[in-house]
Image (cartoon, rainbow, N blue to C red):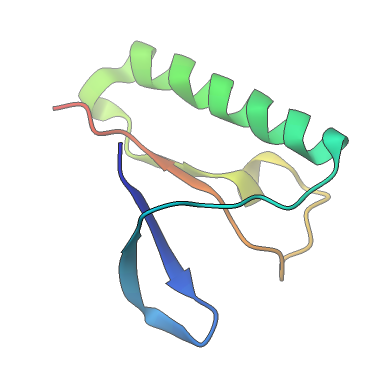
Length: 76
């Protein structure tokens, strides 16, 4: 597993991160968990045809200024 991200100050430089901290409430954490479970299932079903999915596309209530979570498969 690898974790990547962008700093708010520089959206042009993708960084490999050593850790990630999620500061949230239980409801949103459960929604994130549901999203990740759904993506795991899609990766199993689609294999190498799975590209990536955005959490912001999964939950409409999310503020567009909120950070996004993108799931990408490392399946070869």
